Image 1 (cartoon, rainbow, N blue to C red):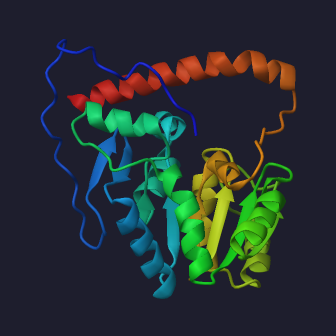
Image 2 (image 1 turned 180 degrees about the vertical axis):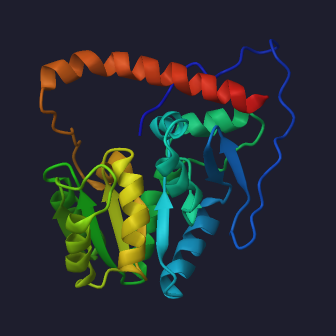
Image 3 (image 1 turned 90 degrees about the vertical axis):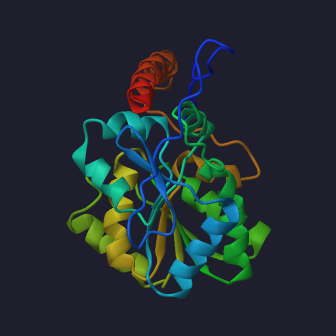
Length: 262
């Protein structure tokens, strides 16, 4: 979940934008606002948790995504990612950058999705849900599953999946989903790179129904007792290039937000 700077407007320099019209689609629990091509649901924490509980208890299943800056930028040119976000049962702001952006365009969001992840795990514990943790970072799924068992008393299993293709589907993913389905999960927490995570969640939700599949990104690591650093193949090069990538991504994000204000 990456943040972005530069969204604040100097006091008195610009008038506040008029409230943006919300999208109200039949059958959806909440109204939605768009930042660029990314829809975001307007539900509060208690409403979101109640919605997820209904999806699990009713056997509907589905996928829930938490887009942030990278997803907003990528969705401008990625039709598959746009479809995965548009068809999600819930699309929740994954970080404070999108919350600030929504304020800029005149549609304040309740709170970033990352804040309800511990609350969701608490709900899973109270309802005795079976939880799967799926991650493409070595060790993250296993460590998180251990934390869920130790801290929350959950029946949780961690599965490392480093071979998921970029489109999130295919024969290998079918075999993986068949194995995951044997555990009869109620909730599946997924942490992968974008857009693989979103495409996998969309595809796996149909294979794992009635489980609810949630794309968490690296926010999954917030459930651990210790800091988590993703492994890099070329750590020195990654350290040098990371600030450059963040700068270009932030500039692209600001262009999308500016266009959304019009």
